[in-house]
Amino acid sequence: MNTPRLILSSDVSLAGQDSRILARLCSSGRYARVRRSVYAEAEEWHALDEPSRYGLRAAAFQLTTKRQPVFCLESAAMLWGLWIMGAPRKLHIQTSYANGGRSRGDVARHLEKPGDNIVACGPLLLTDKLTTTLHLITRLKFEQAVSVCDSSLHLVRYQRPGNIFTPVDIPTVEHDPSWNHDAPQGPPLLKSELLAAADALPKKAARNRAVAVIDFASGLSGSAGESFSRVRMAQLGFIAPELQHEFELRDGRKALVDFWFKDQRKVGEFDGRAKYLRQDWAGGKSTADRVIDEKNREDQIRAQNVGVFRWTWAEMQDLVGFERLLRAAGIPKR
Image (cartoon, rainbow, N blue to C red; front, side, top):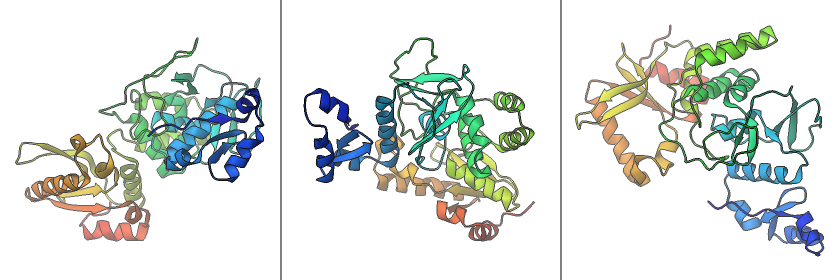
């Protein structure tokens, strides 16, 4: 997916043309307004998915602000590939006491004391992974906080190649500065790191909240859907499953399952769409071939006297329906 070229009103004026022409082209449908005084070709803009549009809005903001912004909270989480739900509505910017500035429009500014928690990812500045994770898990709902924490602990098996610029005196992180990551980026955090950072929080309520999330979190969770599912199971009082249990299949392959209930000999699988749609999984096979492979994998697991049950986002979000589904599968409560 090609990134659209951003066109600034100030550039048009410097070229000796009337910058109001951009507004007219926007009204005619040829251009799209990315933010005030910044435009892009409408066809290219509308072809972008939600995270890519968010990234273009961030790039437009960076081009039009006097100071280079430091992205934090959900904005930094997107660059780290942490599991948040969809693209944020606002751009989250960290500001110091010296710089000041107010939140307005689609920009939310968060006052923080200057520290050594800022890193560079390509041409972008953002809070480091530990700071980003800790700030989010003390602010979000429990299931969302667990999802973020799980992803910060998650060891990814693949990463996009880095393309890094090196600003002076700012540490760099070795991954692609993309707003559309589908896996966590950078080295995984350790629970000990998170607990030490949580212990340094000034407010007791924030410390207690962070510790509760960290204790529940697991780097074995493979997706936001799996993290949410685990929280739902706990909220409903069901026994805790083993995560990423390995089965050996008769064709010699090994298969990892999302949830394994050993005593009940039941496998639970969260059915997200990603594994059927991502191009870098399954050697670039078509969606149809992936579905067939998944069925073959499941048949070989069932052949080992194992029951398999599945659920979707919608089923997991419906607490009454999800409880019914788990009971029907024979999963007991604590």
